Length: 481
Ligand SMILES: *[C@@H]1O[C@H](CO)[C@@H](O)[C@H](O)[C@H]1NC(C)=O
Ligand SMILES: *[C@@H]1O[C@H](CO)[C@@H](O)[C@H](O)[C@H]1NC(C)=O
Ligand SMILES: *[C@@H]1O[C@H](CO)[C@@H](O)[C@H](O)[C@H]1NC(C)=O
Ligand SMILES: *[C@@H]1O[C@H](CO)[C@@H](O)[C@H](O)[C@H]1NC(C)=O
Image (cartoon, rainbow, N blue to C red; front, side):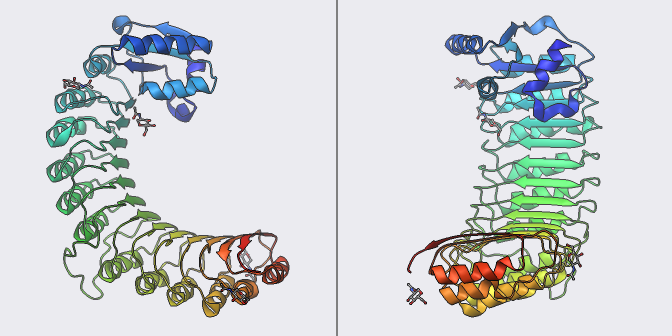
């Protein structure tokens, strides 16, 4: 009993599976010095320290195993929690691990944090075999980032996951592992056989995956019939416009998908402009329209008007969208692209939360005006956050922002970052002049630092806004009085 309680403290994040006995291992590479340092360290913090040998248990009642990296345990110790730690000291990390997993085939939850552990493709294959014997597994969290797995290793790792018929949640991190196009396509094919997957989180960034690999991956994933939530993280790779659009087109075929998050910052989008196929005018793109939450992080790509035209059409198909997060930071956007994007918002009438990042681009006032104008169609919008740093605003565009915000009937929270937007004193007053909200709780946060705002303009704005709204916060810095 005591054992369970203490482990719970370590793992407060993982309370959900703590009903059953849970064992924590720390895997140590054999360096004796590191071990000595660690033991001293733990004793200093009055940690109960128990060292178990490999063969000490093989208990069928174990339902969950979590192996955390040593670095994390040390962090927990620093926060002064008393913790009981079982140590598995092993020369060959993966093989001893497999032995443990093979002894616990009733496992329902398995969390392995084996990133930066020098895992080869051969070891990945053995690990895959061990995992595939756990036929009751329903939650697998496998962090294998920064190892040497490569295409063959990845194939061997996942090829028998389908044997875990109860698998519902999979978190697979194979970031930085020399994986190429072939590996990505095979991953899609193999996961397509995991019929019961509902939640899938894949981190495959910093490999050598090009557009064909990315599309191939989506072709597999879209066959998982029950997939409800997909998060795909693939930054620092070689995807171009064709790859991103091909992926989006495929993934919309997942008929039960409600949550979709794609992170493809710092790829080669817009640099290599061959599109998958020209989308015909009025072509029905989305096969499924169930998506409620969509996030796209495409920061630091070189987006152009062709890309945006196609993207805007994808977006306008998401008619049931409630939460939208778009990160277009440093994407070479001009007013033209923002205007193209804004056309999609006419169709997003169910949107409740929008978080838009368009900072560090070269957007002019006409882009912002047009965008705000189209945002008025999102009449269910409750939370709005826009980072528009370095856009250029004039008096008209500030009036437009004010006007459009006032037309959103249930808007509750507004956060806009206007840093370096060339706002002049009269524009500042215009920005708040039209705001009118009803009695619901409101929070308005305008960050107006690094503009030309006089004290008088600031005070006048504050007076105006205090009449209509309870919670207002301006931050500003007066550049020129
Ligand atoms: C392993 O990954 C986790 C989660 O991403 C991270 O917090 C941890 O620092 C990583 N450990 C090593 C040794 O890189
Ligand atoms: C990584 O594993 C290989 C064998 O797969 C071994 O030769 C090498 O020494 C290991 N490197 C480290 C840093 O442990
Ligand atoms: C006032 O706000 C509430 C919700 O915050 C909304 O339901 C209502 O329609 C608004 N009334 C008017 C007159 O805009
Ligand atoms: C700042 O605003 C004042 C008052 O409108 C104006 O006289 C001044 O030229 C502006 N300065 C800059 C740098 O735009």
